[in-house]
Image 1 (tube, rainbow, N blue to C red):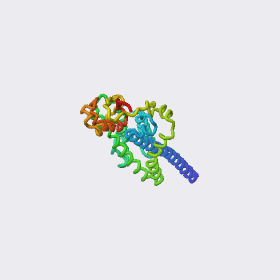
Image 2 (image 1 turned 30 degrees about the vertical axis):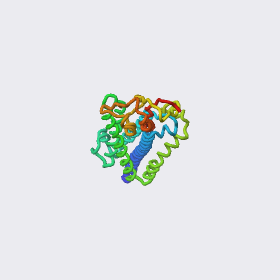
Image 3 (image 1 turned 90 degrees about the vertical axis):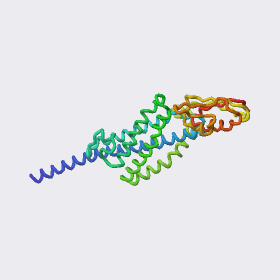
Image 4 (image 1 turned 45 degrees about the horizontal axis):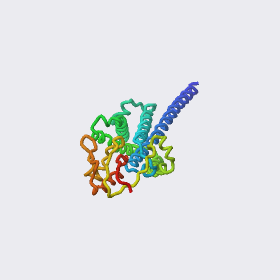
Length: 282
């Protein structure tokens, strides 16, 4: 009888341990899946931002990329990252408090701290994305550019985590990293423009611009709603366009004919297509 009771107790302990392990296995699978979605969304957000800034979205689709599309992708990245972080609170094998999830170096390994810093930066940048009108534009832009640091830290966190788990994850991350720019360009080329417009990624089709006479005087105007003060125009035509310290763009509306080439280069370089040129048409 005693031996039977001991076997029964050992069996119950084994079943209980197995139940806990199964629970934690499920939680870890959810954490891994949300991590992959976060990495995928982060790569897509980065690619979309680069394609927008370089004008590739406009060249491939004939439509102007919308800032809201980039923000939508960034918000999805933050949400997926939040699910990944919060999933660790439900593990039975290791009890973590909420402060350890959002404050780095309180617990866990160095790679965990990198992920926490990256997530905190992304949340701060997302929360302040619509506040650029309340601050000096240059100061807001410098803070917003911390997104590149957050992405770099998130990349290191993802790769270190994949290396610590399995080599399969490393190959999966490598495939996503390499393939995402090509997939983004293919999607822009293949998907109907109307679908991209409905998704809020690009704007409605703009009227075709007729070629201008390069030797005739031109009038320059800038759409302040489109202009994001990236400074590409100033790089192309510094005598015509100049970013002031307060973030405003100053430009000459009637440049000399000898500067037409620089003005046209500035209009082409603007990723937001905010510069309009008026003059004699050929």
